Length: 195
Image (tube, rainbow, N blue to C red; front, side):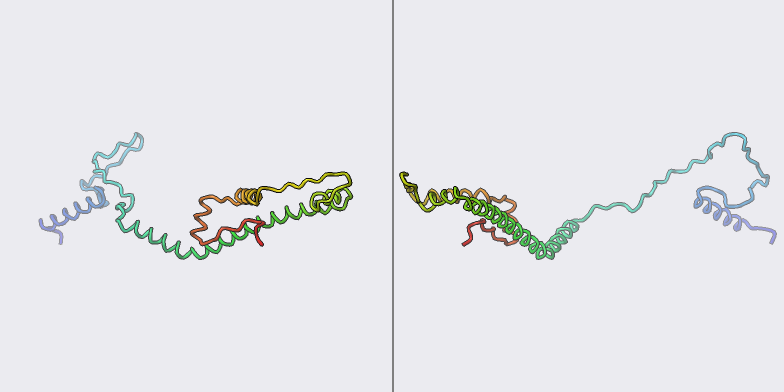
């Protein structure tokens, strides 16, 4: 058992070399080969190791591969499915908001009309207001007054003024018209034109 053969020594050297390569060149055995132990001096600056290691490239994670042509197709498909599933809820919400906006316009028109009628009622409670209403609306005149009645050329002048006031109040934007077409909402009727 005391003697080793050259084959055993060769096998021992090959395993030692393979171990050094795996561990980066550091010795794995605890005893030095020469038998004499060397002490390192801690008084001076340390010198870098004389052996230079080949700088291995650092791996920062998996390599990024370019996306295939199927990724945009999947993204577009998901957007289409999402839009198709959300369309009924969006349509209902849009129709409700448009209906609320139309009702708000009608409310404002009725509130203004109510204020005008309240002012007229307050005016008719005075004798001067009654006299003014009798002259303008009923055609009455005091003794000695000459009454002239002016007849307009036609009904076109009154309808043009009404149409102009309605068109000015109900103009909607191009985006609003496009959204109305997408969600199937009819344009709200102009306030004050209901029978």
